[in-house]
Image 1 (cartoon, rainbow, N blue to C red):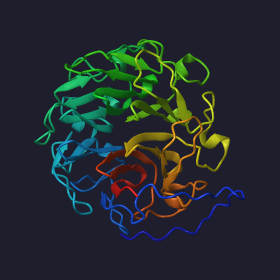
Image 2: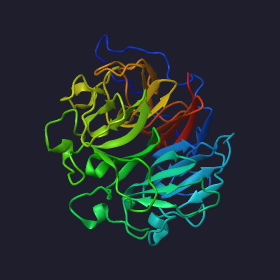
Image 3: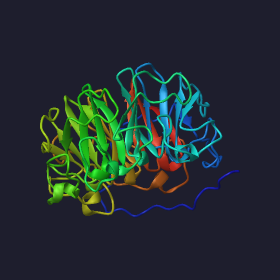
Amino acid sequence: MKVSAAPSFTPIKAAGTAVSGPPLLSRDGPRIVLGWSEGDFVAPNIPSASTLFGPRGAARLRDGTLWVADTGHHRMLGWMSGPEADNQPADLLIGQPDFASEGRNAKGHASASTVNVPTGVSPWGDGLAVADAWNHRVLLWRKTPASSNQPADIILGQLNEQSIEANHGSDAPSAASLHWPYGVSEVGGRLVVCDTGNRRVLIWNAPERTGQPADLVLGQPDFNSRDENAGQEVGAAGMRWPHGAALWRGGLAVSDAGNNRIMLWRSLPAHNGQPCDAVLGQTGFTDCDHNLASYYPNAVALNMPYAVAVEDEALLVADTANSRLLGWQSGETGAKAIRLTGQPDFASKGDNRWGVATRDSLCWPYGIACSGGEAIIADSGNNRVLLWRMA
């Protein structure tokens, strides 16, 4: 069925705040759109090989395959090449018996080939890493899955493939447990997991077996703590809702969504609880208000940034609640973003620019990855994934 246009609505901004910037992504719009057709509405709760429901993560692996966390359908979709056309059906799936099925853990017991609210997706060596958030675990494949429902080789956060309790059923975490891990990334050869519910980031130097404990923790002083902001006022060491991580200029960038900022370490952290060196999205380490305590954003501010990625020395940030993408070149605290996509200027926000979805609009972009000069965006609120060339 066709969707009629929404009534025109143009919020009034304060004078002098609408500052435009050069585009982050191509003005031509996405090259490929998966899960959505302009002008048509396909019910996202009806799973198929070409529909998506609130996808929260997507990434291209080193062998060129594309994998998407189709979060609302509790499955992973894989394209073995391309895709080369809008809404091209996926070739493989993990987590369901067929493309028409959905449900947490395929409406059965957990296994090494089921998922429950999958979110983060990342290359891992020659294979695949998936943050299986509500099973409180991370799934690792040493090689790219070559067939549907190929079981994971390694499970982190649980002791076996049937276990799914947060923190192994304990009130306190450990170096081997997870609670709502929403983000996973390979950073400098290490595996970095945003253990969101425990308000920390865990780093494995070389995961090799199921249940293996992490080697380092950030956001907490030790592996047994899980306090918001490390039990202190907002600062350089604690975090509130970490969601994504990336290697940037030899250091680590972490999206601390709950504190509306990006935490930056200028080199890869070497000890537990190491404070970050700078933050983006705030003007100081002790600040945490969204949009710098204003209704409208600007080139410095962020509102629940869920994801980070890097392309050609630029840091890309999914400024999720402002429904926009930002690009930074400077890693100094309080630096301004210099590139923008999804809104007409740095002072604008609003899902789909306060209108209906168009090919180049955004609604709660939740995940972002980069590969070969192209951004891969999980445009979660629009139930689609965008493949969009850098500007």
